[in-house]
Length: 504
Image 1 (tube, rainbow, N blue to C red):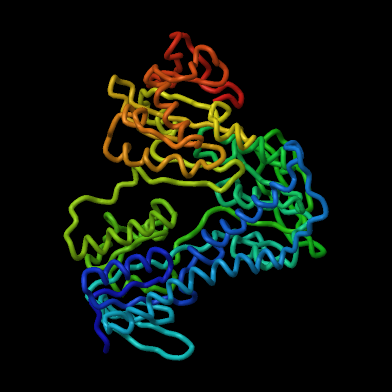
Image 2 (spheres, rainbow, N blue to C red):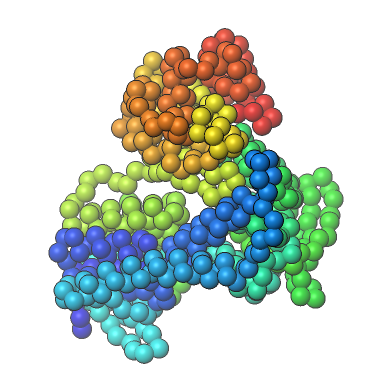
């Protein structure tokens, strides 16, 4: 029986990061992956969908008619686009595989393909079509990821009714596509197919607001842009039924006002979250407890079996590639370096690939109000940022949330608009270190750049911005919000609406 210092189960982003970090400590490492190295971080997930988004964004530029040029006569080939996506997947997989091949030659690392499960707390059985073996590991890190959630009454065949795993199975751009779920993944795919301009997109949303975890001013811009691009949002609706009828999708919605409507679409995408991949691991043989929801019980990634850790989507914290890699590295460091502090999720940067792009770190207003936390907020619109003016694309804003005191520590930031993801990272450092926005105001940014908006938003809250909110009252806002959610204009001291339509 082969013995290892650590066995990592799952070769997605989290598992791969854990295995490589364990090698940094000079340990003998085994990485087991049942299917494809890279997992959902590459295939039918983060890399593939974002590659598709980038292509769709390029195509959307061809539709622009107000900048002195028009494009005629271009063709779109869905299968060629999907091949481009597969090329991106293959490129990343090859990089990962090349590194594993290098470390396998050292004798300290092994990579095995197969399904892993526990025979005992330290014995892992690995089964594949070619072989069956049992290995022993002093420590185990579970990184088996997650899969799209399905509903028993919806006949998902990954051809007509699909999850995110089935998008590449389409023969062509569907004439129409209905998406169940108005969260990040559903809205991203709505954005992608609308941008190509070949598909009529519908979103089923049980609430009034898409992306319900985000602030209304942000989601309003995203929803408006979706509808401008032809997306229909079935707001305040509940799915009564969905079935395949004569090769098409028939779906029935119950609206909250009492209406019941029947619709048809060529394809359907089910986007209602993901579920942890724990089936078949035989966790009971290892003494690993699960809760009533089937989630693995853990304390800062450590399970009830103290030598077994869970990372990535299995932790049920935040299902993101960067978070999974952070948790994986932390678990290894916890084993071999006795790291005392738990993982902090307070300054995790996120990006939503929508139109416009959305990025954030730290708290949003909804979270502050829920915690009855007083704060100050500044909103600086893209129309005052020179780079956005150059791009002729000034729809968006930067929102900065700070503590309601003289120090004005940065609590959170949201950016919606072009290059949003590139403007927030310095803010993550300030949030982590509980530092004042005065430091942001002192930085010298390249000109013209979108990041200048961060500086001006900070200056506005500090009272020394170049463009003054008292002059541009409807477009630049600077408010104090008390523990009850009441907003007062910081400059004029008068009450302002918590939300004014789509004005931030």
